[in-house]
Image 1 (cartoon, helix red, strand yellow):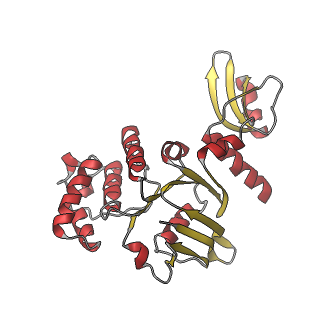
Image 2 (cartoon, rainbow, N blue to C red):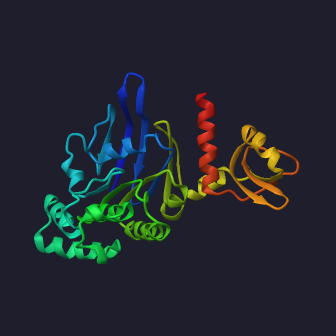
Length: 293
């Protein structure tokens, strides 16, 4: 099982590119596609899902070009787009039954699969209520269920935890981890904690370009010795933010502890800290912005 993205670019207008020269080769596991809003994540997901075509380059599923033979992938694809629409007058079971028929599932197989998924995404009590009355988080759970209907080999989920409460987010993360096994899961998000909890590898993307594809451990090693804690006064914090890349701040009785990502200590009083994936994410994004500037 292999997904190969080879030198893919997507141009929308003369000087507007969604992706530029994007190359990636993936096997089974969970890929966390991490980048800020507008980085090109959804553009890439739509092309892999055969909804859009690259301007140049090609995408191969098990050696088959999906632009010329899309059905080779569509038969084994599960896709939850960022903007997931529903039929508000149908209940969850009716909606999933309809989509199972669209995907070609036999009636008996579909019914059994829907029962499993309703329980899996914690919608048992709301299964026969019209979806129009669902909260945003509940609709997202319906979306997750429909993406899993055909037990896909390739599962694409684009910003899947938007609208989920903390308990639902943890449930979804556990579900993604359980699903990995012998399939490929592409998890696109700008929420670092979602990737940190589930991904077996991470691709950092910014302004349509792939910055780094590596194991989480390798990304952490790359920023080892580049994260600092510096206790400053509240008055000094505003100026500090203009001078350094600050990952976060913690207010204390004796001042504000700033977490700073920098190649060298920002001050002799600063102390080194253990890096996190969020530190690595901020470091590589900031470096790319400086290079482009």
